[in-house]
Amino acid sequence: MFEQYNKVQKAVLETTLQIIIRKELQATSMALIAKESKVSTGSIYHYFSSKEEIINELYTAIVAYNGQFVQEGLNREGTIRERFTWGWERVIETSRQYPEGFQFIEQYSFSPYIYEEVKQKAYNGGWCAPMNKLYAEAMEQGLFREMDPKLLVQMHYGSMVYMVKSYLQGNSDLTDAGIQQAIEVCWQGAIRG
Image (cartoon, rainbow, N blue to C red; front, side, top):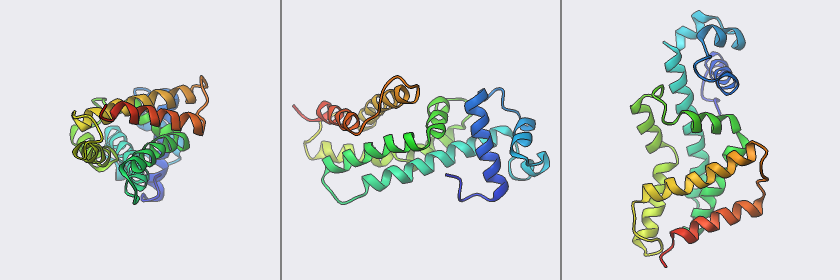
């Protein structure tokens, strides 16, 4: 997930993510990041001016990774229905493969720690904008009921989030059949009656 960063940056970002998942953001200090990453505070400050900058870079990196992964499904050649399915399968898959990234994004997407310009850039550069485009295309073709594509995508994402959260907390299984059923329910809820 952090392959594009140098060794120090990668260590800082990976360690910060682990600490936040374990202890929460407020308990994550630069001293603790330095201690657990085994990177000196001076080296950290060479790459990041503050804890907030680390948090925003972490958010940006996770969203970019997830966006690239999901867009591989959305951008495949296929019908709207197939791309819809592939996109949502990949949203769920990236959440299962990288649960810490999923938890971080879910917990801090609306946090004041994340700068507004970072949130907007992430929204447009991740998978949300391409998924919105797919939904708009489905509406233009008369497949989906007319409504704000962003709102419909967010409604479907909310369903997927709770399904993944239930799985990560050990309250339910996340089987391929269950995933397909959830995606089908979202499709059926969106199509024009």
